[in-house]
Length: 460
Image 1 (cartoon, rainbow, N blue to C red):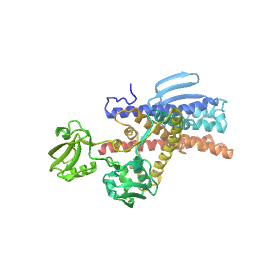
Image 2: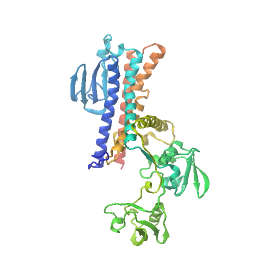
Image 3: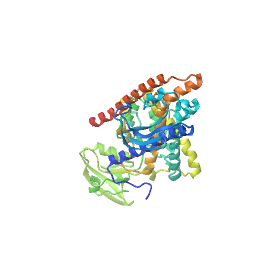
Image 4: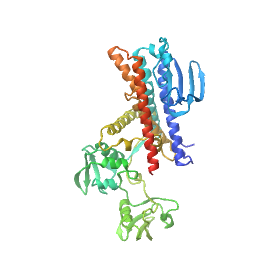
């Protein structure tokens, strides 16, 4: 069976299954990181659960498991509340809030009895595992598929812009040289650099003249809210790359590889010119001239529907431009996987920082819950895309767990660093109260994010 096997399921079901598979795998591996270091330092792990066997974050409510099995000192199980998972480490203040056990004197096999540096590794174990998983997955991706991208300088026909691109005074055919004076090597990263730049500048070559365009205030918000365009695409010749089944184009007998040369007698060279001609002739009779097989002229007379959808797709840019292709052997793939993981960490940090600091990015428009997470996955299963997104989600889990919020790993790390620097251990009472507050905040954020998803579904 090939790696890019397509599953014949509905798009929503495929997305849901991918989300479930990715999160289940990553949660198990995250918790295994804590489990590994706990056992390494002789600490007893009482529970190892995928999902919660209680109504998170209320450890005393609705306590039951879908599956559980005791092996040694550890109970392994699957909980009923399908958001997250946990390991219950003996003698530790955590989401289980086992106050009876904490009231007793510490035992040698408890978390409380271990040295501060050992407890630090136990708490960082999940984050370390998520980082290692991302590195491993990226290494596999680069080893099997290598890397392919369009260098910005190879987009020789310039760009095609959507309405947002036009609003910042970009034009079809412009050649983008840099953003904020910094060249962008990969074409597909130009929109991201424009987003991160916010109100910066774009340097372009227009008809042989160098021009600097200011990015107007509000552009980033428009890009993030847009559900259709990608701001810019490589400009490609007006050659048909695909015909939608049952479409008007199919009924008019257009074929793949037909070259569109004129509309109503006006010469057409690029696909954006053809799209513009369609928009100008909504609901009107139109004559489209096409060259087939390099020499056969075909003239089609029709009426453009008001939605302008003929069912014609443009050709893949890889057909016209020299793509950068990089192959990796198993050893170099590991090095690339490691460096790419840190690069993606930096990329996610820039996104996170924008939510906190940007005046154009509203949390109510940028945050999302389970539905938003699921929509990140492709409705058609592709192993390369699934692994790529799973690795990135692993990075997100590592990053979010590193945040200094009580209840998350990062909150415990802050307490431990305080202890290591001052020599004073934070009292269990303070830990309990801080963890309770942190868990309630996390629950509130979870409800808010998923509530936004529900609101967006009804808004449609």
